[in-house]
Amino acid sequence: MQLRQLGRSGLSIAPLAFGGNVFGWSVDEQRSFELLDAFVDAGFNLIDTADVYSAWVPGNRGGESETIIGKWLKRSGKRDRVLIATKVAKWTEHRGLSPLNIRQAAESSLKRLQTDRIDLYQAHEDDASVPLSETLGAFGTLIEQGKVRAIGASNYGADRFAEALQASREHNLPRYESLQPEYNLVSRRGYEQELEPLVRKEHIGVINYYALASGFLSGKYRSDADLAKSSARGGAVKKYLHPQGLKVLAALDEIAAAHQATPPQVALAWLIARPGITAPIASATSVEQLHELLGATKLSLQPDEMTALDDASAGL
Image (cartoon, rainbow, N blue to C red; front, side, top):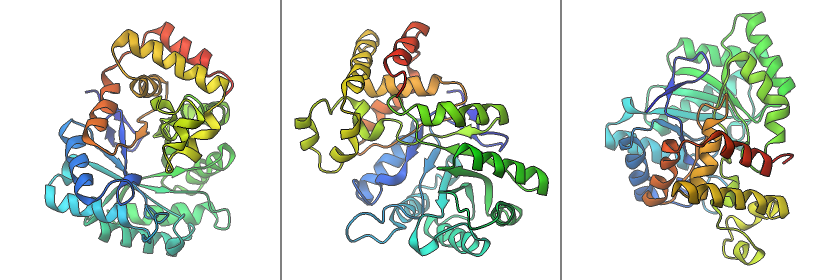
């Protein structure tokens, strides 16, 4: 498997990342361990999480995903085979990007993860109340201390991300080497129109989330009746259930049939083939589902198939 470089960070990443938002939410600790073992044993290495995962679950407070990953790291002995990416800024216990908050949040994440380093530490959202130089300086201190290897950002608009890169240059501070935007076949414009030209020009790695549009691109949701079967996903998927969304599913079906593949494999393969994408983030709740998703990395779409998907999803 050919690894991809994440910006100029020196981190080499397999072309699909595992989304740890499911740990402590839709999968319990034992299943999480099984998924992590299967992911790494298949040759993949980037595990993406955040301190806030999964605070939205009744009975949770946040930190559950990192805690499960930490237990797995200690039990499995596979720390040197993985790259751990986590985030700061969204959790009410460590809200924002002030230097003090970043330091405290990083220490808390390191403890939960039971590790001495975070491979990729990301600003989970922008914090305009703090000068970018102060935020980047705090991340830089963590890098100097060996507690963080590289930094990235999630949910930044193009203008602010460009400002952050300029601040790094002006103040000789570490730069964001990755961007984590929402990007998939039914949500293209936000990334492609503004962010894509910038990240490709600056050689920034992209590890996009919602790669399967909250499950819509799996093909499981094609009607209101299908939505009603999933209380967890139905609300998030409903916005894609329109004529053009169904047109995208039809294109996925046709291409999947030609490759003896599945719609989610084709949707991920389209992303993997897109210039500038380092590794889409995908989540699974069973080992069987995980192996299906990982199969996308072995699927080579033909130029006319890429064009067919581009055309079906144009304007979305």
